[in-house]
Image (tube, rainbow, N blue to C red):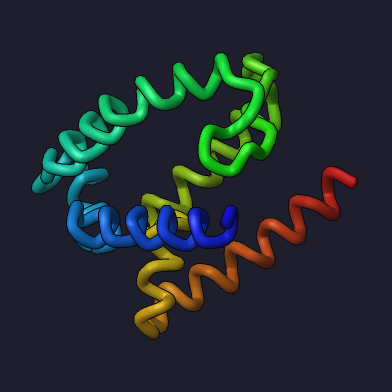
Length: 136
């Protein structure tokens, strides 16, 4: 049952990325280009996503296990901002700004056979492997 829920959730998430424009690298780059032809539409998408997620996350924080599957809730407990978090955020942001992809949209586009998305995912996986080796 949990795999079915994961599959359906992933499909809904991917569809949302496509409909919202977050899977379109040129739209993402236009959103990030504050000094040029800035496209603020993705800010509305992000604000709507936050608004929709606030209630379920606040409920999930108080529950010991998931409602449907009964699996334990493994939400992060650490709330401190440390060096690895800041460096990871900087690398993530730089990659997003250069490529116009972040992991979710890249997976959606790679599934359609987009060569740049596939290249991005390969580079991302290599980076994740390298980061794991550096951290030990």
